[in-house]
Image 1 (cartoon, rainbow, N blue to C red):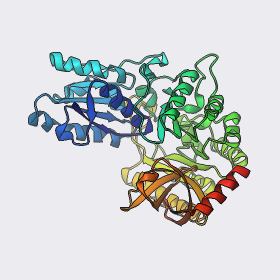
Image 2 (tube, rainbow, N blue to C red; image 1 turned 90 degrees about the vertical axis):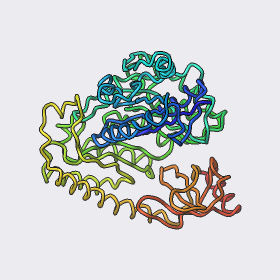
Image 3 (cartoon, one colour; image 1 turned 90 degrees about the horizontal axis):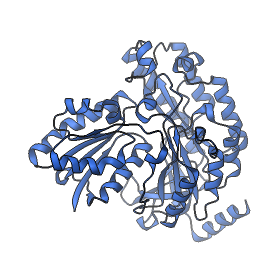
Image 4 (spheres, one colour; image 1 turned 135 degrees about the horizontal axis):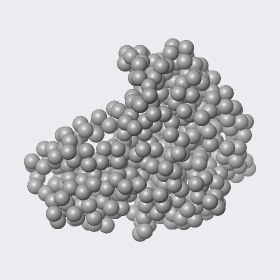
Length: 454
């Protein structure tokens, strides 16, 4: 059995793509390993959404040069967004690199590896495909482990926000047929999966480019009817496409978790306009208000970019005001960095000083830490259902899981509980996570009875 070492940078879409890489190479008798020094095939699955993420790619690949010197026959490949963005230029820059495959070409990886082995050529595959069949695995997913699974429902984005490289590295929107999605989830449930995360660069626009296909809200309704499935999540959403039907789904679909990631990016209309986001601050807030009216306990997370070209102190202050007004449960915040091929890199000067960007990022993160700590402390005493994920990152002897609202809960418990849906009482909180305790048998019975009555 040959060894595959796979390192992943970036978002949940990349994590899912890495699972596909491991699966297709598993059929070629490659077994995953976490010891790079023993690997016959080394793959880096990359992200280029931020400059820092891209630089990490080159740093890792530079370090891997010594693998060629230490072990003859090791194959090194790069996939994902940086591979799509740079293509053959990566081979010129990195002579020890053997192959490059883009975001639409995972299924070609086995043939590319064979090509390298047979002729020592250095193949590059970065074509885009309009038909969604490139997202399908003809042999299906049969090696799923654990109670949670990612399911891609679409890829690409048609929004072309001025700062975003996604349309250039993931292509235009393409949606998988709903029947195939439902069949895949049914198969996953038969393999023990209890929670699915539906993935796409803009899931809210699912089906819009496929005549006769379901809308995203209709797809959620169809998935909600799958027997044995317990939880549904999805990411990522664009605010412009947060429809009334999707908002209603949060109020009516029992299995849809009460959590929504809705990237706002900035709280200033002028910045949103330069970003080409397609909505105003008031329009964004109106959608949030309608959602909270229909699902009062929904948890919200968002993305924030500080230091976008031309961002003034007043515009940044608008972002801070928005954070205080919405009170997100979690944010992902970044300093602006120009990305190749994007509109903002072509027409705007990166004119906000690095020191100002860093200070603004720190201010955003400090404010959010206060908000998150206050909200988490307010949940102390509540009983929450968690899906146990595995070992806690904090302490030995602890496990961790997530509530329906996507909060992390750490608690003392046996690893045999991994994959279980478990009611716990919240007894403590930090800004980043909650502390829980397992309930007694009587408390569990009471909790489940209350849920059935509700």
